[in-house]
Amino acid sequence: MSYTIIRNAKYKRENLKGIFRHNERRNKNYSNKNIDKEKSNLNYSLKDTQFTYEKEFDRIRKEYNLKGQIKTVSNIICEYIITSDKAFFDTIGKDETKRYFETAYKFVCEYKDLGEQYILSAKVHMDEETPHMHLVFIPVVHTTDKKGNNIDKIACSEFWKAKDSYRQLQNAFHSYITANGFDLERGNPSERVHLPVEDYKKITNFEKIKTVLKDIKLELPETPDVKSFGKLVRNRDEKIQELVVEPRDKMIKEQQEQISLLYLTLQNQVNTVERASKYEKERKSIMHENKELKEKCENLENDYSFKLKEEIQNIENKYKDEIYQLEKENSFLRKVINTFQKTVDKFIHWVCNKFSVSSEEEFIRDFEFENAIYLDPEKQIEYEEELEYEEMEW
Image 1 (cartoon, rainbow, N blue to C red):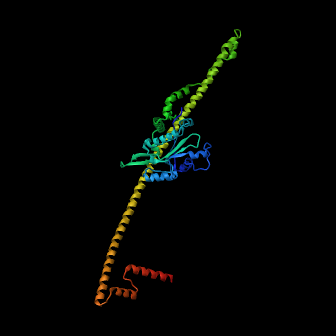
Image 2 (spheres, one colour; image 1 turned 45 degrees about the horizontal axis):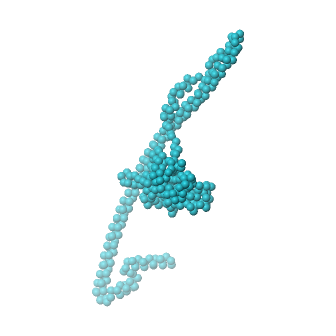
């Protein structure tokens, strides 16, 4: 019987370049000898990317305003590898194989309400022995911020928060695939179980074993000297030694060896538990120290953040005041200039009437020519700058 297979991998930003080149077949040579490059034209995309995974990640993050603090050690991308066995795909044929991967693609879009917009790429490889799909996505959780606003946040640890999150994934994927008409068994998960030290002590009856070890005696019990015994029975049946004494000695030695082996076994078990207890205490101590450091760093970060915001606000207020004063001063200067311009115009008009000048324009032109001065302030400034430039060149 064939099985549904879905595997998840987590990647940091530094890993994206390598998986992009592999998934999108951008390499010239591959260490994987199962890749038949002559069949690479059979590969197809259920969602294509026009950019590298890094650029596509940045684009999606900006476009959808994704929250979440991203560090260099953060896992920012997940990749599902979805497949079954070769016999299954050979049996269902090309069209059903494509429907299988399309169904799996829809499952990923709906699982945990991820949404298709957060899938970077979905590439089906047909150039290897078994068809499979590489589906790369951003682990986005839908949550709320401190103010209660709905936000989408990049948080790989929260996306896979449950201890049995992969078991839940396997169950959900199998149910979805079989509901869409594919006759497959659920994949067998391989999950290790961690026992706390205290539970292990209960299972192994640790305290009782320690007590038993103290009472075990490894010395051989005292037995009569065979030679002395032989003197006593020399005149009797000599078979007593062969039938009674020697078998008894042999049995005692065998029991002593078994007791020694048991002692070593129990001692190893006790040593293991004691070491585990020691490591458990050290782990708790380290976790406590890490918690204190984390709280200290968060407090420092909050303090610096508050001080920085306060300083920025002070600078903004300072510049706002200066800008306001400059605008006020500019407004006054513009008013002075306009008033002066009107006064000059009235003065010219009065002079022309007073002295019977026929044309105000000719009067102004003669005045500017004879005195090398423009009544228009902008022209005068431009003229003076030209004179200064010529003087500097000379």
